Image (cartoon, rainbow, N blue to C red):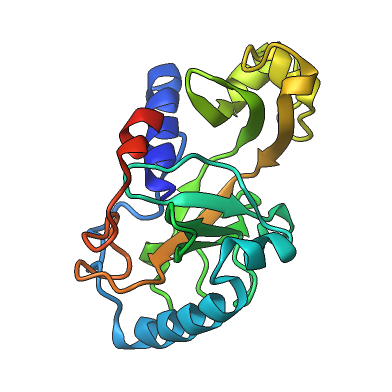
Length: 225
């Protein structure tokens, strides 16, 4: 799930700016991790549609999604399609798979464009949406520190002389994340988003919970984080 990266970005920004970075949308108490009646309708329909459309990584790849993270501590491996930063019901921006290639979760997003308030969409509570700050992602052929994927903060990319909005393999080298351009398989800008995420497999803790006790991370997850 993205919460782990979001937390890392918050910490980075907090160190540099004291405040800022990726934060939850509202300071008020967060709602239950279990959907409301209205939310449950959307979650159930979206889950059924997404399992049909993207239930395997082969289906995701055919639809233009590709893996961009290692397995995280929740057992999720994230796939992305940057065409869908402004998501619709059938086209989330991100899909999560477990190590067996099973679709287990999803992110829907809306580009913020400086908006102060989160979206009101699909019957979801506005408090479900959080600000997922801009950064740059990349993939590597030759893994650095045991990971094939990584990210660079906007400040670090800018300081290295790279583009934070249209990064190239050369920019990833400038940022010190790869030794040569040939090692970089992709690089893309992750814009500042309103983001909402939920599990597309049953979760006794609630569809919106950070972790799912029914999803068991592999032993590799701890080594990749």
